[in-house]
Length: 143
Ligand code: RB5
Image (cartoon, rainbow, N blue to C red; front, side, top):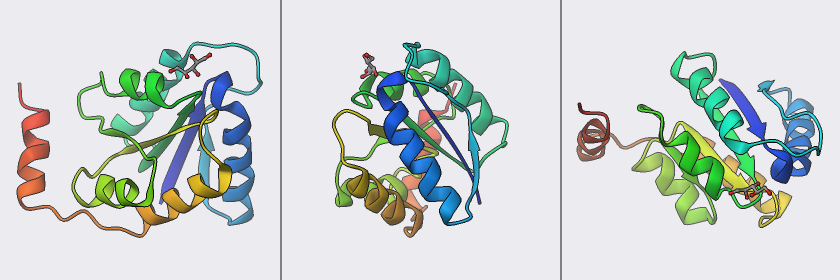
């Protein structure tokens, strides 16, 4: 599985910690930036990630801004993107089981690294249920 990760400056510190964590675990990871704590605009990184996921260059995206809110809003403007802000274990499980999120989102200024890692592990270890949930996802993308 290929994972891509990106953040704005508000998520930069958390992103770097996650990059180190994934590299230690030898996971297949593409880092799409930002590459410093200098101020940038979160829509630019949400757009870059959405295009990456929609063109199948990665199987799952991780996006981070200060709260996770702005970058979620921006990513979800792209048809076919299901970006979910994971803030507890139950939501991490349901975002896969029911929503089959293709981008998971975190707040660099609102969440602790250890919690974020546990939400990612829960999401990765859960399967999409399909069935009635797939029918609902189909409605999201209808013309
Ligand atoms: C940047 O200061 C901040 O607004 C951004 O990271 C994010 O929290 C927006 O929703």
